[in-house]
Image (cartoon, rainbow, N blue to C red; front, side, top):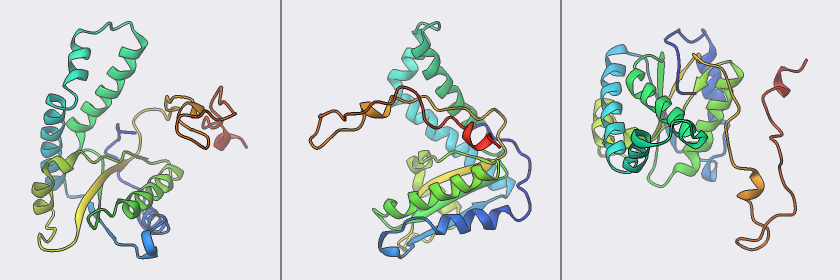
Length: 212
């Protein structure tokens, strides 16, 4: 959920989110991670500008083919429409990163993503339970040194930025993410060997949590 409002977070919800985060799986149960919360508007505006630069660089390099397809593709093609929607969502966040009331950065040791990302995902799940939207992004790592200097991260320490999550109330509707069927990405016993089951339609649609 990239489109997030500027409405303030509810009082008392932030400690709950981080309590959920630190309960996540941690390599060696050592919790070698740190979080940094940014709510200051001036800092958020600077970070938004950096994020915009990072996305522009990505679109000119790794995603150049995607941008070319969007410029000349068939707008009636469902595949085009899906890519267009994802691109517009990414562009919206780059233009509005200063709007969500809090940006949460996660730091860990080099190669320590096996700790930071499970804990960060725990935070995202807890946020969803509170009706809040999040979006894990690593885009700012393109200008990692600049961001870490801006946030006062010691350059001679072990901590490195692994990712960032904007958090706030969603502006749009929660929807079911489009994905390939699970049986197309799961193998059995040997690489490339198909599993014996199929998933013809999603088991989890979001309606389960609304029942009752």
